[in-house]
Image 1 (tube, rainbow, N blue to C red):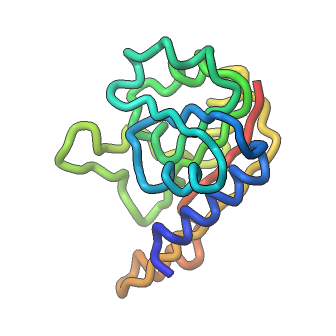
Image 2: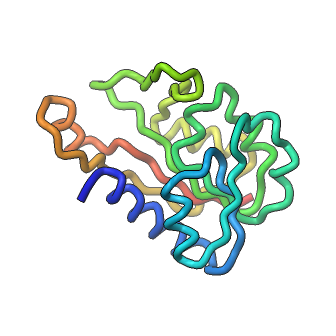
Length: 164
């Protein structure tokens, strides 16, 4: 099982456990294969696409919001987290001591934040969210090297379900 399959299976499990089937979900960010898998389970997905800070019309009209590995790409995630309400399911990479924050060549593909779980909890609480469930995930990647080996012992992703 590949990295994306494992992550998608865990994420889909959270969605199915915390959001009733048949509901419409606002998924922050670009359309991706995970959104297709969620739709196959009976949900309707609307993706925000483009610059999240400019599309403010989205945020007040949905009761269910997902942000799967999106918040770390935002320079100011508070703006989005303040504007959204209802039930939020979010995943973020955990800051680990043996790996620097990801920085791709595309400006939109950079991590401005990699949170420790307590930092993400504080951010959500500051923006008015109440955390009702949280869990840490291991990377699950099967590569050779010191960092992939360490990822077998240190969780790399943090998943949170919150309400506002």
